[in-house]
Image (cartoon, rainbow, N blue to C red; front, side, top):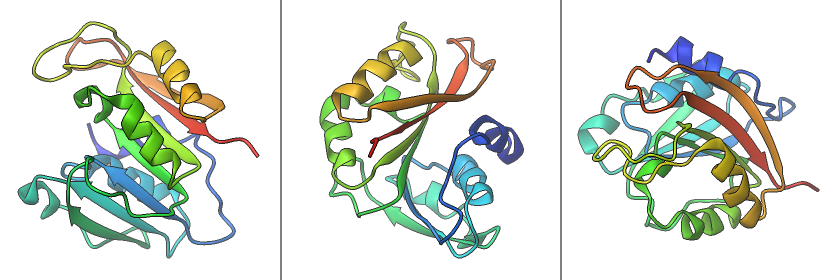
Length: 173
Protein backbone atom coordinates (compact mmCIF):
# COMPACT_ATOMS: atom_id res chain seq x y z
CA UNK A 1 0.00 0.00 0.00
CA UNK A 2 1.23 3.47 -0.78
CA UNK A 3 1.15 6.45 1.55
CA UNK A 4 -1.51 8.05 -0.68
CA UNK A 5 -3.72 4.95 -0.39
CA UNK A 6 -3.24 4.88 3.39
CA UNK A 7 -4.07 8.59 3.61
CA UNK A 8 -7.27 8.01 1.62
CA UNK A 9 -8.24 5.20 4.00
CA UNK A 10 -7.71 7.48 7.04
CA UNK A 11 -8.76 10.68 5.29
CA UNK A 12 -12.10 11.26 7.02
CA UNK A 13 -10.57 11.37 10.50
CA UNK A 14 -11.21 14.54 12.47
CA UNK A 15 -8.15 15.94 14.23
CA UNK A 16 -7.69 19.11 16.22
CA UNK A 17 -6.36 21.63 13.71
CA UNK A 18 -6.02 24.65 16.02
CA UNK A 19 -2.80 23.40 17.62
CA UNK A 20 -0.05 20.85 17.02
CA UNK A 21 -1.05 17.29 17.94
CA UNK A 22 0.89 14.53 19.71
CA UNK A 23 0.20 11.03 18.39
CA UNK A 24 1.53 7.57 19.14
CA UNK A 25 1.65 4.77 16.60
CA UNK A 26 2.16 1.21 17.78
CA UNK A 27 3.65 -1.26 15.31
CA UNK A 28 4.59 1.38 12.74
CA UNK A 29 6.75 -0.88 10.55
CA UNK A 30 8.45 1.16 7.85
CA UNK A 31 5.94 3.98 8.24
CA UNK A 32 3.32 3.86 5.48
CA UNK A 33 0.53 4.84 7.89
CA UNK A 34 2.91 7.08 9.88
CA UNK A 35 3.43 9.22 6.79
CA UNK A 36 -0.30 9.15 5.97
CA UNK A 37 -1.17 10.36 9.46
CA UNK A 38 1.52 13.06 9.25
CA UNK A 39 -0.15 14.39 6.11
CA UNK A 40 -3.45 14.73 8.00
CA UNK A 41 -2.04 16.48 11.10
CA UNK A 42 -1.31 20.19 11.56
CA UNK A 43 2.25 21.42 11.02
CA UNK A 44 4.53 21.08 14.06
CA UNK A 45 2.68 17.99 15.32
CA UNK A 46 4.64 14.99 16.58
CA UNK A 47 4.20 11.26 16.02
CA UNK A 48 6.06 8.80 18.23
CA UNK A 49 6.34 5.76 15.96
CA UNK A 50 6.93 2.54 17.92
CA UNK A 51 8.15 -0.78 16.56
CA UNK A 52 10.37 -3.54 17.82
CA UNK A 53 12.05 -3.93 14.42
CA UNK A 54 15.05 -1.59 14.39
CA UNK A 55 15.60 -2.00 10.65
CA UNK A 56 12.02 -0.90 9.94
CA UNK A 57 12.45 2.14 12.21
CA UNK A 58 15.50 3.25 10.21
CA UNK A 59 13.20 3.66 7.17
CA UNK A 60 11.20 6.38 8.94
CA UNK A 61 11.94 10.00 8.11
CA UNK A 62 12.58 12.36 11.02
CA UNK A 63 10.12 14.84 9.48
CA UNK A 64 7.26 14.41 7.03
CA UNK A 65 4.85 17.09 5.81
CA UNK A 66 5.90 19.43 8.64
CA UNK A 67 5.36 16.76 11.32
CA UNK A 68 8.17 15.42 13.51
CA UNK A 69 8.46 11.62 13.65
CA UNK A 70 10.27 10.18 16.64
CA UNK A 71 11.21 6.53 16.12
CA UNK A 72 11.06 4.41 19.28
CA UNK A 73 12.34 0.85 19.51
CA UNK A 74 9.86 -0.80 21.85
CA UNK A 75 6.99 -3.27 22.03
CA UNK A 76 3.29 -2.70 22.69
CA UNK A 77 3.85 -4.39 26.06
CA UNK A 78 6.26 -1.62 27.12
CA UNK A 79 4.99 1.48 28.97
CA UNK A 80 3.16 3.83 26.62
CA UNK A 81 4.40 7.42 26.38
CA UNK A 82 1.60 9.84 27.00
CA UNK A 83 -0.60 11.63 27.30
CA UNK A 84 -1.21 11.93 23.56
CA UNK A 85 -4.04 13.21 21.39
CA UNK A 86 -4.42 9.85 19.70
CA UNK A 87 -3.04 6.41 19.01
CA UNK A 88 -2.76 4.80 15.58
CA UNK A 89 -3.06 1.01 15.38
CA UNK A 90 -2.60 0.08 11.71
CA UNK A 91 -2.49 -3.65 11.07
CA UNK A 92 -1.21 -4.37 14.56
CA UNK A 93 -4.15 -5.51 16.71
CA UNK A 94 -4.46 -8.75 14.76
CA UNK A 95 -1.11 -9.74 16.32
CA UNK A 96 -2.34 -9.07 19.88
CA UNK A 97 -4.14 -11.89 21.64
CA UNK A 98 -5.05 -9.90 24.78
CA UNK A 99 -6.58 -6.88 23.08
CA UNK A 100 -8.59 -5.82 26.17
CA UNK A 101 -5.47 -5.24 28.26
CA UNK A 102 -3.76 -3.23 25.52
CA UNK A 103 -6.86 -1.07 24.94
CA UNK A 104 -7.19 -0.41 28.67
CA UNK A 105 -3.58 0.82 28.67
CA UNK A 106 -4.23 2.97 25.60
CA UNK A 107 -7.33 4.49 27.24
CA UNK A 108 -5.06 5.76 30.03
CA UNK A 109 -3.01 7.90 27.60
CA UNK A 110 -5.35 8.79 24.71
CA UNK A 111 -8.94 9.74 24.00
CA UNK A 112 -8.84 8.82 20.29
CA UNK A 113 -7.71 5.67 18.49
CA UNK A 114 -7.42 5.13 14.75
CA UNK A 115 -7.71 1.47 13.82
CA UNK A 116 -6.86 -0.23 10.53
CA UNK A 117 -7.63 -3.95 10.36
CA UNK A 118 -8.97 -6.74 8.17
CA UNK A 119 -12.73 -7.22 8.39
CA UNK A 120 -12.62 -10.92 9.14
CA UNK A 121 -13.03 -13.31 12.02
CA UNK A 122 -11.03 -16.04 10.29
CA UNK A 123 -7.39 -16.36 11.42
CA UNK A 124 -4.74 -16.52 8.74
CA UNK A 125 -1.61 -17.66 10.56
CA UNK A 126 1.04 -16.21 10.72
CA UNK A 127 -0.16 -12.92 9.14
CA UNK A 128 -3.48 -12.43 10.96
CA UNK A 129 -3.42 -14.77 13.97
CA UNK A 130 -6.02 -12.89 16.08
CA UNK A 131 -8.37 -11.13 13.63
CA UNK A 132 -10.69 -8.28 14.58
CA UNK A 133 -13.74 -7.68 12.39
CA UNK A 134 -15.20 -4.16 12.49
CA UNK A 135 -18.26 -5.51 14.31
CA UNK A 136 -16.10 -7.05 17.04
CA UNK A 137 -13.92 -3.92 17.14
CA UNK A 138 -16.93 -1.75 18.02
CA UNK A 139 -17.80 -4.04 20.94
CA UNK A 140 -14.18 -4.31 22.14
CA UNK A 141 -13.51 -0.57 22.04
CA UNK A 142 -16.82 0.23 23.78
CA UNK A 143 -15.81 -2.14 26.57
CA UNK A 144 -12.56 -0.13 26.92
CA UNK A 145 -14.52 3.12 27.26
CA UNK A 146 -14.33 4.38 23.68
CA UNK A 147 -18.00 5.15 23.21
CA UNK A 148 -17.91 6.92 19.84
CA UNK A 149 -17.08 4.84 16.75
CA UNK A 150 -17.03 5.89 13.11
CA UNK A 151 -15.99 4.13 9.93
CA UNK A 152 -13.41 6.15 8.01
CA UNK A 153 -12.93 3.97 4.95
CA UNK A 154 -12.62 0.53 3.46
CA UNK A 155 -10.67 -1.03 0.61
CA UNK A 156 -10.15 -4.50 -0.79
CA UNK A 157 -7.25 -6.45 0.66
CA UNK A 158 -4.52 -7.71 -1.61
CA UNK A 159 -4.24 -10.75 0.61
CA UNK A 160 -7.85 -11.91 0.48
CA UNK A 161 -8.42 -12.07 4.22
CA UNK A 162 -11.42 -9.73 4.25
CA UNK A 163 -11.43 -6.07 3.23
CA UNK A 164 -9.24 -3.60 5.06
CA UNK A 165 -11.20 -1.09 7.15
CA UNK A 166 -10.30 2.08 9.04
CA UNK A 167 -12.26 3.29 12.07
CA UNK A 168 -11.92 6.07 14.61
CA UNK A 169 -12.85 5.50 18.23
CA UNK A 170 -13.00 8.21 20.85
CA UNK A 171 -14.01 8.86 24.40
CA UNK A 172 -17.01 11.18 24.34
CA UNK A 173 -17.02 14.20 26.61
